Length: 192
Figure 1: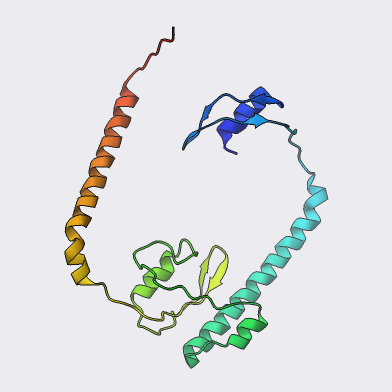
Figure 2 (figure 1 turned 30 degrees about the vertical axis):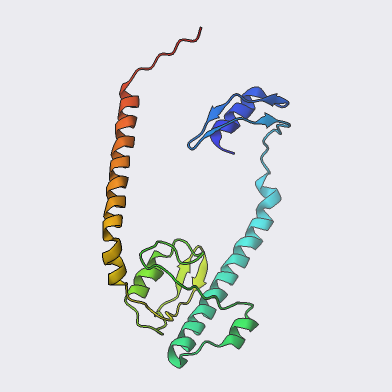
C-alpha cells in the first residue's frame, strides 16, 4: 500500500470508502474494512530471534562463499562442473540461453551488469574467473558460446531503428513540454 492510500485510509477510518487518490502511477480508492492500530514489539521479546538469524546468516554466507570458490576452482581447472558436489550441496545447474549482453539483466538474475561486462570479454567455453554476488546469491558463470552480431540484419533494420530512436526523442520532448506547461500554468476550475 502506497503512502497516499495509507493516509486516506487513516483519514476515513474502518468501514468507509476513501476518496480517489492520485499515486505516482495511477488513481486509486479503497474500501477500508478494518484498520488495526500500529504497535511496537519490545526489543527484549525479539532479541533472541534476531541474534539466531544473524548467526545463521553469517554461517550460511560463509559456507556459500567457500562452496562457490571451490566450484569455480574445480570448474576452471578441469573444464567440467562437479554435479555430485552440486547435488550434495542442494544446488542446481541453471542454464540461461539467448542472453543479450547489452541488457542489464541475465535471465531472472537482475541486475547482473558485472557478469554481463565480464562475459563480453570471454571466450566461448570460458569459466569467468570470479564468484559474482548478486542479491546475496553467489554465482559462478561459464560462457557456453558467443554469437557475433548479425551485421546484415542490422543493415536491413537500421532505418527502422533510427526512426524509433527519433520517435522516442520527439515523444520525450513533447512530454517535457507538457510538464513544463502544467508546471507554469495556474489552473482554476469552476464547477456549477
